[in-house]
Length: 166
Image (cartoon, rainbow, N blue to C red; front, side, top):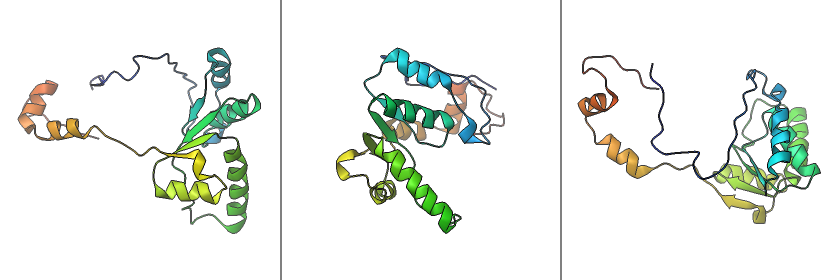
């Protein structure tokens, strides 16, 4: 195995923190981070960005921001395409999300499905902005033009070694 090195400095130019709670991801609602609300208090940010509401710490941060009137921005995989839910669950989920979304200043919308979902829960168009997935297409095109041999050489791999990419 080899350590990963990013080709673009992702953390330069701003202050950042990492929390390591040793989570149990099988039960995402139980993943809480008291450090998240502590960090919000310490940093006193102009706004907070959340990627969703699946994890406990996201709900904690949402509640904290709402209580202290800190603007909250959300960008996530918003959808109603969950056919496995029964009518009672759909009703409770809809009520929960409508209330949750009231505490969010604005939403980064990844696609049309997310836009429709948010609208169906009472979010006005004024609170939505486009935030699609993106890639550095130039870099992908440049890398895709390399031969297998060039890639192995750049990574310091022997030409006859087996490589798994995931």
